[in-house]
Length: 558
Image (cartoon, rainbow, N blue to C red):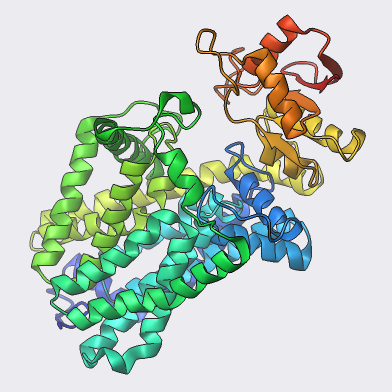
């Protein structure tokens, strides 16, 4: 196997070009560079710290899942997404109690060490002209820093993924020095551990297993391919046996697969996706994530922009494929593997996720390796040309400045908000519709009997802001009438009685979170309205929160 480290030729100061000078400077100051990026990461984690819960509600869903692991063990097993982070939250709740700010601090720590191990994994693997701008993204990007203080899985996952990268290159170097895989059992086990952990943290990361096997098969290293699978199974098999023993037939894919196969996750009546639908889904996701989200994350497009451009998506794909072909042809084997793994993550995500999700975090976890490949191809293309090197430095510098400005801009807006939050006002920073919704959730916990069960469109967020009161989730119109697209009132009432629901919370959550246009998320309204029309005495208004964009609490009478 060829040596992994980048070979550099010593040149005199008069003949060295800007790339060579940057490599020389980077080698002499690599410890200071690492410290700089770690300090930058902590600085942006501080000014972008978010003490609240996201309106996207997935972070609240994870918190609720962690709480249920503690209080409903062993009846509860989290299946909406991969369970590892939720299990971690459950452990923290068991040890420390429900401490939201503490959980957020843990994610800041995970993000800090994600930067550290990413640096360690790629130091000396790529030229500093590529490495430094990628580290600027990893340590300073506003969305990475947003997730650093939120109880989403991203900070935790980026930490585990960096360790996965780190142990891959450690093992790769060890196999270069001694190709006998049996002599590196500890490194194989560490790689297997973090392969298992990233797959248990994000289901899409299961592609790490076939990516490792494919990488070693391409290299015709049959034993290493078997060892990579075996190292994963050493941890996967006992885990699955433990899950089966404690929780029965539950697994992390049982809940997700049913939802992902649907044409519309909020309308089961439309049925499952067919082959043509998956192809359309893939194309739509390519356009969304590679022509919109990719450039938003670099600060080049407005974060509220809705336009997609097929040409931009095609351009990103073409450059990525060209970069992967280049590193494969020139036998930069670590980058080949990282490219295979990242490409497989993107491919699987674009096929299995409904385009309506359209969340930047889907592509965010792949961005560091994507940028490495893109910058590396650009770097190698212009290396021999003075003008090309200058253009490279200018363009990459513009990207770095854009990333920094985006983070500073958001940080300056965030500081007054987080000050209010940390001072005790946990509603400050939300728009009035959300303030009323969350305050109404808190009112339910403070004013209703403990045995009541309230239906909520955002049940996990209601759970968090009510300090642990259980709410009944409503994600779609139940018992829908195909003619009216509203609930059948008799069936809906029977359903609520069967589930033990005693109250319904009716919020006025905006469709466009930035504009009070009067258009609201009307899922619960489409359940309540036909009931009130047919049985006006069955729903009793008992509380109103707010003067505008109100939230209402209705009691289901007997």
